[in-house]
Image (tube, rainbow, N blue to C red; front, side, top):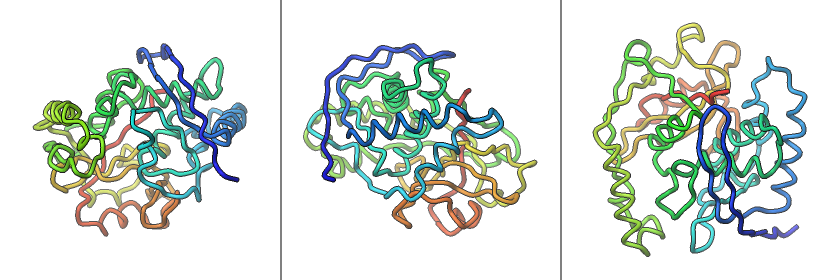
Length: 289
């Protein structure tokens, strides 16, 4: 069936239990199939036992969903895009976390989901223009930590033996790769300002050669967001996914560009990351429940 995009203007104001602030979304783009899927998944999660990972429950519902990049670039103006049928690594993580947050809401419905998605994706939950989207994952971590939605698991000791000095300037050095930056020089300047706030900061991470250690050594839980750090010039993180322990070994549940769909990778995370020269290790982000 051909997709029909439903677009409506709205003002959403929400206060998150345990943190967060106003969530302002001027417009939401979605299909009826997506809204129905959100409602169904939220309904299915209502009976989950507390011992089961709510994040992995939702994440595994997307296994086999096609990998598609650029799904947020809809229309001339920035809009909150909901697309559960085409995911990249970032929209997969955001969608799953938004479902998890919405499932704990007093009214777990589609609006609770869009509220959560807006808050996660945009600076302080305010959708304004393109630069208000949290493009760098280091910025995403800092912003969502400040609202009490997530925490970064990190200490200045083993196994966090590696340090990354952020040099986030990829977008401003390659504006031709971003339609919004070529069309609006003011947006480019705002992006530069966002980058400058991050440049020079030091973050501790677990190097990839330590990812073959056991669960009693690595402070990683099922359902943690794993941000794969990179040495690529101008970038901080090159890929995202969820941690899954399988028979005592760490795997990545992610929207895979290689497999063109959401998969629980058959390779351990140790072998996956060591097969890619540009990946250096992982940062750990945990949803606050």
